[in-house]
Each structure stands twice: as C-alpha cells, then as structure tokens.
Amino acid sequence: MGTDEQRTLGIRERPRESVAAMKLLYLDCFAGISGDMLLGALLDLGVAEAALRTELTKLKLPGYSISTRRVVKQNIAATKFDCDTGHEHHHRGYTEIAGMITGSGLSENVKRRALHVFRRLGEAEAKIHGVPLEQIHFHEIGAVDSIVDIVGVCVALDLLGVDEVQASPVPLGSGFVETAHGKFPVPAPATLELLKGVPVQPSNEAVELVTPTGAALLAEFCCRYGPMPALTVEKIGYGAGTRDLPQTPNVLRAVLGETSGGAKSDTVAVIEANIDDMNPQWFGDVMERLLVNGALDVFLTPVQMKKNRPGTLLTVLCEPRDADRFVELVLTHTTTFGVRLHEARRRMLAREIVRVPTRFGEIEVKVGRYNGKVVTRSPEYESCKRAAALANVPVREVYDAAKEAR
Image 1 (spheres, rainbow, N blue to C red):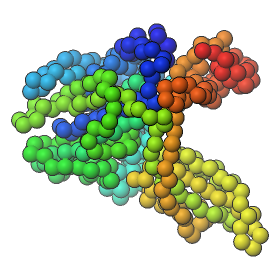
Image 2 (tube, rainbow, N blue to C red):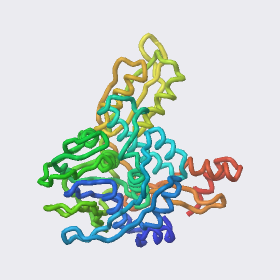
Image 3 (cartoon, one colour):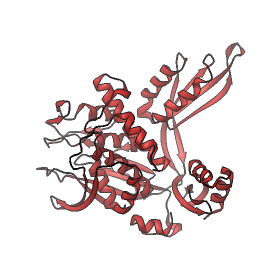
Image 4 (cartoon, one colour):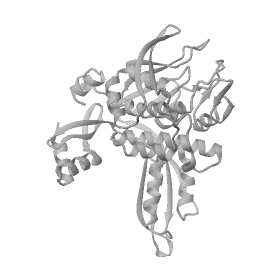
C-alpha cells in the first residue's frame, strides 16, 4: 500500500521492518452487532468516509446518501454510520442483488465476499420459508441501506487489509421483533439460522441485539470466537447502534492489532469424492456452484480407480462450520454415493493486496509476508486481464510489468 493510499484511508505509514505477520481485527460484541454498527466501527478505526464513498459508487446503486457523526452512548464516544434512503421502499431479490454486485466495478475480493454474505442470507431465508433460493425476495435485507451496509463492510475490511477476524460470543437479546413477515421472538428466525455454530450468550436487554445482517457478516468473516487473543493493539474503534439501551452502551468495539509469529494458522474441512461415472462436462458446473457458495478452494485430480477405470478426485476445502452444507452440495450435484470428510491444519503467509503503478495503469498485486518480510509477490489475474483488454496486449505483458513494479 503506497503512502498516498494510506493517507486517503487515514492510516499512518509504518516502517517496513515493523510490519508483523498478520493484521487481526477483534470484534467485542458486548451489545450485539448490526451492519451499520460494524461499518461505523471500521470507519472509527481509520477508513476514510471519502474512500468508502468512492468504492460504493462503483455499485451503481441509486437512491441513497451516507454520512457519519459522533455520538455518545453511556459515556462512550462512537461513530454512527447513517444511510439515508428517503422514501425508497424497493425490495430486491437475491438474483437481482447478485447481478448488481457481479456487474459492478468493485474489486474481485469485495465482490466475492459480498456475494457470499448475500448467499448466506438468501439460503437462511429460503430454508425458513421453504422456497428455492432463486425465489427469495428480501424485504429488510433487500433495501438500499442494508445493501450499502453489507457492501460497505466488505469494502472497509478490504481497505484496512485485515487478514483475520475474530469475535467474542454474541449476546442475542430477548423479547420480540417486528418484521415484514410478522412478529417473531428474538432472535429472528433468519438470525438464528445464520448463527449456527457461533457461540451465543444471554442478555438482559429486551431488544434485538443481533440483526440478520450482523449475523451474516459474522458468519462470513469471523473464523474464531472467544476472548481477545494475544496481539499488539494498534487502534480501537467504536461503532454506534441506533437504540439507547437501558443497561448496556449500544456500541460495537473493534480492536485492530498485529499478531506475532511467522504464518497464520487455521483449520479447514476437507471433503473428497472419487468419481468415475459422471459426464466430464458437469464438473465445471459443480466447481462453479461450490465456489459461489463460499468454498475456500475446489480442485480436480485425475486418479486410476478400481477395475482400471480412469476417474476424478474432487476435493473441496471449506470452513469447518460449513462442512455439512458442502457435503450436501457434492452429494446433490455429482454422481458419487459418498464422500470422505476430515479436518486439516493450514499455515499461510500474512497477505495483503496492494496497487502498483505500471505503464498499463495500477495493477493489484498480492503480497505475502513471513515475520514481516516480503517473501512472495503475485499479480492478480483479473486485474491484469482487465488492463490487458484495455491496452490490447497479452496478459503476460501486464503480469510481467506488475511483477517488476515496486
């Protein structure tokens, strides 16, 4: 990340040798979480409102304006993010929202994460109402302000260069909440569906503390729940909610810091299936479905199976909490009668996306670090492809130019 870009985001430049292995964001959800609270906390950490506006315009979503203001919730100063939609009441379906994001000018990483969040929301609603995902028509979630919250959080996390998100157990609140489908007990059905596998805790506040949007963002980005991990604290941000709670400051605390160590470590679920009786043309559709649904990786390996038949080993990597969902997808969309399932530990370089200047314009490059030292640089293919198309040159020319740039 260059100096000009750091100034745009409001992030001070640090000496290169002080860069640690991983940038970690810890969400202290003592008052719950919603999309606007999380976005307010990320802005409070240093993401400039101007930078957020610039990225959101790429969505080409009409009918809203955004603003931020400082508020105080029970003696805690926080940033309140507001999205004013006037009298806009247009509610969109999952397919319409996915098309809007896919066709936008947002970065590929932001598109991917935003699509995953809406996919999670859509699948939760589809399960509750007993209809296919394609027929889901969002009400609260399909409104402009919710789209801005979700895409805005994906943009802000990308701009901050966060490597990992962790959170505290989540208090749900109590009582009842009014929705477009009627009055439901807290947590709302979609919220509870999204929080499967997430540690929750009781609260004396008789209101909804976790919204469906907040639950979906946690499910997408957070990899661990528990006490704050060991880290060097860099910044602390507070994002304010709309209500004034009687017993709890209605804010979300976000702690941005650096962890020590050479590489990030986590656990993934590995799903495998040997297939020798499926039309090879179908593998492309299967891979696309798995990746769109949030698989971390999907790959095919040629294998020689029993009776000397050539076959294909399908391997899917996913978050352990999502394993059942991906097992169902594999069993539903392939001809296999069973899968193997186990967990594996991963060690990964700390990484960030930087934009480097070339004669073809700015190109996104993924930088990998070990103990703060850059050990690998890899130009992003989609970024090179777009620039090559505009310049009418081979992709490899843009790729080589980006590799040489510093």
